[in-house]
Image (cartoon, rainbow, N blue to C red; front, side, top):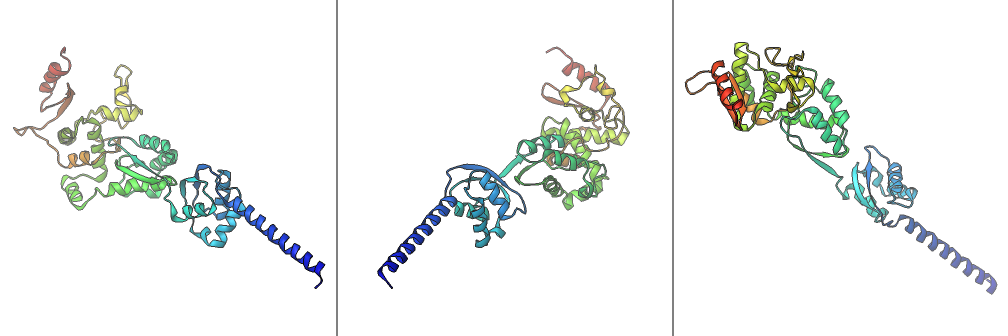
Length: 337
């Protein structure tokens, strides 16, 4: 080979090497750190190409195309874990590891309080970034999710109050199922035996417990209040529970007004107008209220049934007769401080 030909061949090799090195450097730069940080949502079933687009739009990648190709050829595209992540743009390879099991998706820890209504739960879910509206829709129209012991249309009362941890991609149906499973954990064999002995259906049990929960000022009051209501039910007396009126009107207890005619409101939930239990629970009772209905205190030390109660000055006053009830009201609620 002539000297000139060798020189041109050498130059070509050098040029090819330099070109390759520049392309490799550029590709590594495209796949390298961006220095940005973002929260991204990786939907269930997202493909590698879709994930790459999400990361690129969030500024975590310079080239979604190259990242998608890397996921495909490395086999990681099939191992992507859906969820919401807080990620740093530390480069394509670290991002790929993070999304295929290297990092846990963000989760939210929510506490639903005893006695709260489904609408309160929905608000808390929405505030946490979950679908509260969808949750409430399922509660009101549960369809196949309705357990056999729920006699009404709504799941109100069966959304057990507790602390839950949810993936931020949790669907309304998954949230409802979690709360129902937690309620069913309370339906132990001993509880079922007590319900049978007391002649209570699950629906009646939860409905009464929801009223006890709303009426009680403390856990120790619950068995006494449950006893009053059970005695009234046994005698055909109306429960006359203010929280049922509040629920019928969509109000809170402090908002009720006799002057506005609230207690005359015509609703099957108004236990001043209609005897017996309302059609369903008025909130979601906790374990203490549920157990209080199964283990009530129904009589005073002389064996006389409790039929009346009221709160005044931070205390619960119980009576077995209407006359004594009126006298206690006069002395403790209506007397001057």
